[in-house]
Image (cartoon, rainbow, N blue to C red; front, side):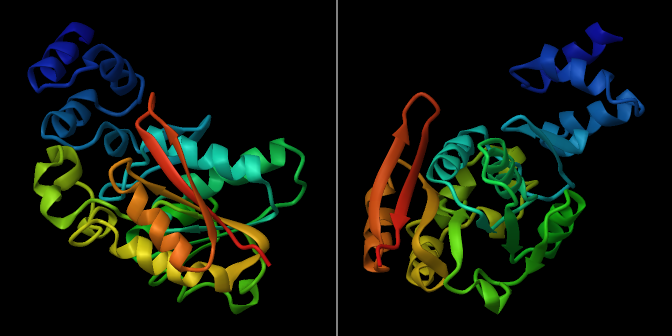
Length: 251
């Protein structure tokens, strides 16, 4: 059985066919149906119903954005900055917020308050299944008013793929993840500008916006963060292909 599954996955172009076969065979559900879904192009994480992220097992529903491993840089930066009131915007399954909260607790932060938001109701439902207090709505609109001016860490993995570049993404992304989780507008920075423009109002004095971007777009993201009244800097990890912009509310 294992060899047959590996052969089917390899024929479908799965680079890590052996590893994927082991996960599918260990799932406990009828393996042929799972392999059929994977061979048809559905992301492995959606087929399994979970993703490993920053040491956590995060539940993932079909059609919900799959957390990328490079986003661990965002989590690491947020945890290093510290805080106890965390907001995860554009939360998807809630992986970023969960990982940041877990990291803060492990670092001795004590009780951490986490609120997440996403415009996609399916993502909000998935985040709630992961135990996250998630609300549905556009960026800051659904956040509880009492958080205004009190957020220590505003963690955001907003879409930053330029609209015209979506067609060039792997089929498992463009065909199985919602466009609203991928499309960042003409230059990929439409959501970054909106996030940056509203961040200062929600951050506590000394609070931080931690925003994932790409190396190519980092300058534009940094400019948006600075225009929003924050002191910004770029953090990059070339080994992981990961880039974030950190914006701090000073005063």
